[in-house]
Every structure is written in C-alpha cells, then in structure tokens.
Length: 383
View 1: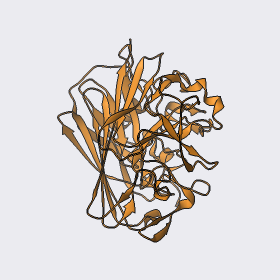
View 2: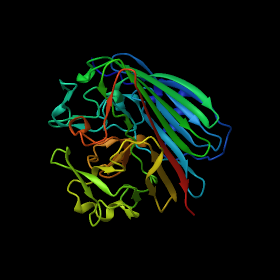
View 3: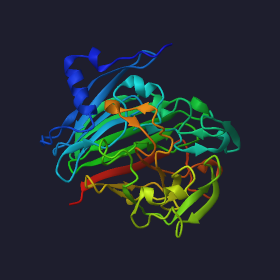
View 4: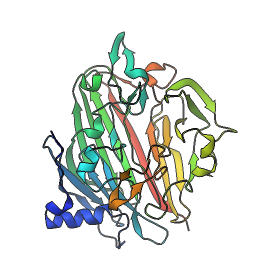
C-alpha cells in the first residue's frame, strides 16, 4: 500500500500552528509557564491507516518536548542556551510520512533488542532462534519492524516532577523472531529542572532477551553548527568493546587509555575521529557487572551555545554514535540537510551481542520477572 502523506497544510489551523512552533529549530520566546499535562494533536496516519498523535510536554521553566506515539519518537526538545533562548537540540523530521520512510532511528524507542546481534541468531535454554537480519549479516535495533515502527498506546499525565507521557506496546510471541509475549511501558517525564527522564518496564510470559534504549540524535547548537565535532564529550568508562568489521564485539574489553576512545577527560569529538575508521559507533563499558543504581555515564558541552547535557543511567554500557551514516541526503526539520556528524547518539544499553557473549552482563528476561531501567538526560548551561 502506498504511504499516506499528510502535510501540515491539511491539518487544522490549530494543529498546524502548533507543529510549526514545535518543529522549528529555534523558538522566538522563552517565557516560562506553569507545567501542565501533555496535550496531543493529530500527526497523520501510517501507511496502513492507523492514526498517530503528537504530544507536547511543557515544564514550569518553558522547556518543551514533543513525542509521537509512532515509535515513541522524541520529535523535538527545546532547551535554553546560556542567554536563555530556547532551541531544538534533537534531529528529526517535520512530518509523520518522513518518519515512516527512510529514517535512521531519529529519536525512537528501540527494542526488543537495541544494537546488534551477530547473524541474527542466539540460543536460549537450548532453543535456537533466528531473528530478522537488517544490518548486513546481523540483526539491528529489533529488526525490520522494530519498536521504532510500532504505534504505541499513549496516556498523557502529570507528576510532582513535571508532565509525563506513558507509552505502552505489546510485542507478540515470534515478532521479528523473538520468543515470548513482551509487554513494554516507557514513561517520558520532562522535569521542572530541565531533565528528560525515560523509565522503562517490561514483562514477558516466556524467556526472551531484552535491551531497550532511545536513539535520539543530539546537536546542542542545532541550526547554528552544521556538525557536532566541536562538542566536548566525556565518557565515564575506562574500557570499550572491540568490534569486528560488521560492528559485532569480539569479546575483548580493551582499555581506552592511549587511544582515540579515551574520553575519561573532555575532548572535542572531532579531535581524533579521523583515527577511528568510519567514525565512532562503539559501546563504552560503564561496568561489566549488573547494576541498578543511577550513575553519570556521559557529559556533553557545546561551547558556542553554552548548553550542557549529562546522561545518567543504570545500564552497564553506552553506545556513542557520531552520526557517521548521515550523508546529506536526508532533509530534516525546516528543510535542513543532515550531513555527516550533524548529530550524535548516546544510547544507554547493555552491550551489543550480549545473548551470544556469556561474559557480558545478561539480557535474559524470564516469566515472572520485571525488567526496569532508568535513563535521564539532564540539560544545563555554562557561563
């Protein structure tokens, strides 16, 4: 069936006005307003005719996030610079039709298994499973129709910390080759201290593997700087997972010291990227043991705008991806062409290919257990 394309011009005047403001890289006002429950407007229909909504979360300081229940995608995120001007700091598209076509996971919720599984195969309790392969010989980000391409049930709400949006999806047994009926809930909260919090929960009726994350592409000076190479990055990790030519871990956890992977102190991303063939697309090891405590994984600073981002997570790894596969052939919000390194991802996660690497922290979820994970993106500024 041919895609159904709905542009802003054919929605209601109110929806069109909202979307124009929500998706433009720079808002002209930074007036604070009381935080309210998320509000939703029509965002079009999927190729199969399913109606999709776009929700706005606005905190008490005037920061806003817009999220669609198609893929749980974070469409825009407006945060202040050092002068107090609110600007969008994530990459994305102006229309649902663009998200349903070629989309490198902009802002999406990723599952059932984020990152790669070698040859799309794993064995669980003696039973072999074959997944859909969609990244060369490997399975990537849940398969051909992963969670990023599903329509989630959405419930706006409020909390003491700020407005919330609860998204729910039930992944049936056998979807993309994964065993078990998996029920997933993700709660977005835009707190009044300019933190975007993602709380993940999942249960299953049969043993399966789970690795949930978000794939937002950040550019803290989006619309002003055409890439993120001057962003200064710190990663709280002394090792990274060495990968083969198809980006599958070899099993070696190599020390970062003395390599271009050493971000234990701040470095501009572009300083040593030429020493990494293809650019950064690797998992940094925060810990090689399971953990449940929220800890800082990464910090990011953009010197022109003064914006900062601190990533906190209870996951054992973080995948730093420097936007290597953006080739200038995708036209994003406000008509911007996204070239190489225009945005970066910091995907909190378990390690790639963990179902086939028993020495890595485990990703098996069994019936009667509940998967919990928490990630926070804390925004600020420097003078």
